[in-house]
Amino acid sequence: MQVTIVDAFTQTAGAGNRAGVVLDAAGLGVEAMQRIAAAVGASETAFVVSGPTAQGVRLRYFTPTSEIDFCGHATVATFHLLAERGLVPRAGALKLECAAGVLDVELESVDARRSRAWIVTPRHPWLETPVPLEQVLALVGGTVDMVDGSLPVRRNAHRIMVPFRRRADVWELAPRSNSLDVLLRPHGLSGAYFFTRETLEAGSVAHSRYFVPGMGVAEDPATGSAAGPLGMYLAMHGVLTLPAEGGTVRARIEQGDAMGKPGRIEVEVTGRAGQPEQARIGGVAVTVLDGTLHV
Image (tube, rainbow, N blue to C red):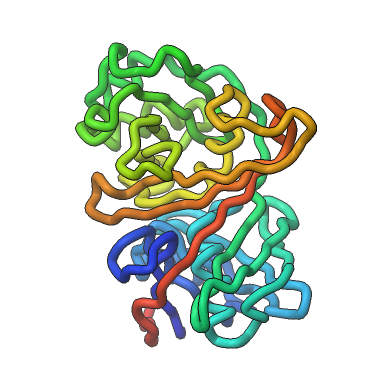
């Protein structure tokens, strides 16, 4: 099976978030895809099960332990590779079909060799966290005084999102993965996402870490599927300011630096002041390795 290794949300091999990409997965069953993803060992591997066509592609995503409905960095990696191979135009509008639905994708030419992929992220309701925050913090090495009390802790999809005041506190977190999974799993949660507005770079709006034991990922280096919701959250709570008459705002989210794998995720939020309607994530990628996998 031909597999390509791509690092997304970076231009430097070894940084950002690594994904496996299988461009010709038509006819592969679930068991085969799961075995391939486990052998690749990246946080996610994307499988092109249909296409590419003039309209777009259909993808399935697997972590080393399970299938998921959407993965941001593996989608960026896939469209980067399709454009690099000349299988889709380097600029233009396409569609992504996956278990999360049909999502709009836009490829934007960066230079003679690279394209940036912009992907609309799925929307999920914002809910109160179903697990006591103190218990979560105890299992990641945090304390209540680290939490940014000016912003709420919320559940979005299968993750809880926790605002911290200081970047140093975010960096010092050391999760007990198995125990965290035991706490979260009964509530349909797979991970905990911690972020702070104290960033490394002046052009960024947030700095984050994401622990996802429920998907077999101790820590994810750069998570597009969480960055889109974070952009919506920041717009809802006035950290990102949308025009009163409606429009868009762009920002950058930092992730992976605490792991030595810095990634930078662009986020675009559309809507009115305090009422975001849609988020897109944007990123570039770099092809690292192409070869034959024997499973």
